[in-house]
Image (cartoon, rainbow, N blue to C red; front, side, top):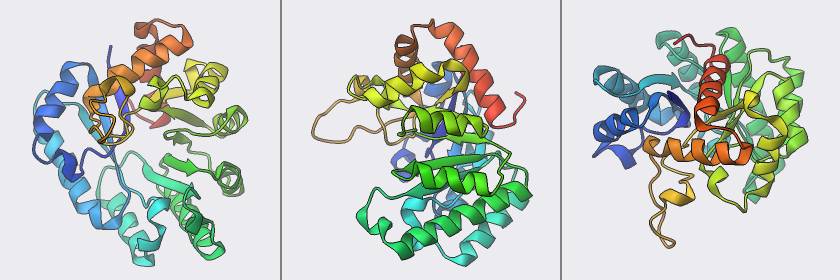
Length: 271
């Protein structure tokens, strides 16, 4: 059952001491491919280095690259960072632009000037994705209506994945209609995540992909402490599959096959 971890931050320092071992473990449990996601221009070099590192190792998942400027770090983004993003898209074999979008989880990001800056950077990155004919990996928190409005205004046609989806059924259906798959994280292992369970049941497996979002979003079954964050890794992706299969009342094998095909379709890949 090949699995595709469609959203990782496997380049961050959390994994510097044991990245190769974890990559080998992930491959051993069925993770055949993963995407390395960008979020800050200052980390693009490390992102590319990790991608090249993974490509040089044997018996590890196939690595794909997706650079982007994350809305949560909007205060740090500068105009020249968009130019650097375009340079990476030109020079590297990137599968998508991400993660990009809108995030008003923090009250300061609701301030008109900062939210306007988020919207501007989202639009600019969608333009780059259109120019280079890439799908996008969306990060949307507490701003689904505004994000969907921008996607429609841009007439964005290359689709992608709505990562770590936190909206409702109607918002999920609107994104599916725009050509997106819905990304399901380890949050599906939480029985209290009722909205997410409703979304996946309403959509069905044909519109879903799975992800770890490592080192965050650790599945409940993989957490070792209630007091300290347990590092999430690509090795935990089968736990996401297992819980999603239970939620959909579907066999893990048939679901894994569907999710693999969905991942390739969302990222415009042939494997």
